[in-house]
Length: 269
Image (tube, helix red, strand yellow):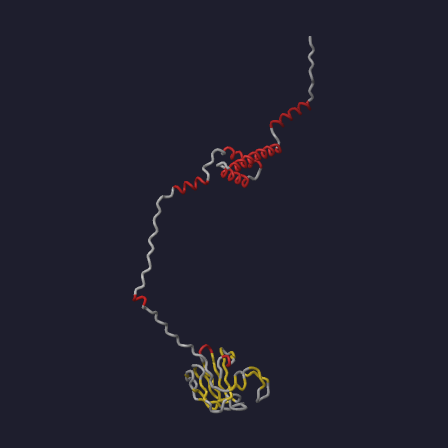
């Protein structure tokens, strides 16, 4: 009778065999990622080959690949998207070129003719002899005129007062003219003041449009009264040598909105 030899297996070896069997049935995460990368690489190579040979579904494959790469966030999602792309490989629709051709062919063959262009009418003798009337010239804007013509003996600005000897601001110009020379209004206005003072002697003020006021001093006498309206060029007074004066002359000043204006910027005596 033959002897039967039994080999004793230790529990540690049994556990090792079971562990190996389990490792074969369930791959690890790294093996899954490697498998997904291999599948992805194969699909990418297929897409490149299709692009080189210019097969009809190249456009759809490229669009599907672009959407997969843009939308997948994990390797598992990338693997599932590639598998779905592989299943739909044979189900693409017509190429974009075919769609454009179909749309063009669906247009009607006849095109409506454009409306006729109306020709310009010939110029008739009545029209050829017609002359456009010239516009009437506008009335010129009233400008300043000098209140009197003469030599400027003292311009406006800072100066030494010839009477007091003090450095003062001269708020006007002095026009050297003989006593009794007529003084006229440089613009339309209204007499708003007239009288006598120690410094200016006999004086007068006129109010004009746009906030202007003119001032006249060292007069021999005035011809207009307060409140009277005068027009440009109307005689309003006579020159003289009254007040603090070193000789016969007219002191003429201009103010706008209570601000002094150099009279030589408005008139040229």
